[in-house]
Image (cartoon, rainbow, N blue to C red):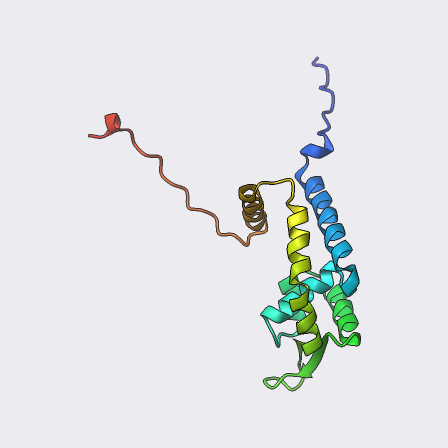
Length: 163
């Protein structure tokens, strides 16, 4: 009878899920440290950016766009609305629906924060070369399905194999 093989437990630094979680923690900490003066969290910034890029969307569409659940999105929207950074308006297409728009104060804050965003991204990628940083972003986009897969190329036939 064969002896059972001892269990092999991979090191945490070999597990992509763990590394992604750690990278996310690092990313949020860097951003929120730099954005503290504006009192904006990373998820609030994501919501504001989505509304800047897609003004007039409803809350369900916003939640899907930013990949947050509806309750979390609703909480963020309410907080930003209380601060006067966004507003809800009745939809002209569907009187029952409400659309979301950045207020002028929200728009100005988001524009003013762009240097903070650049600094946080530079800090996040500081241990990588510029090419590695671009490759990391490309791979992360591919991982979440936002980057189209490259078509597989057929291997080139050698000259000797040609008729």
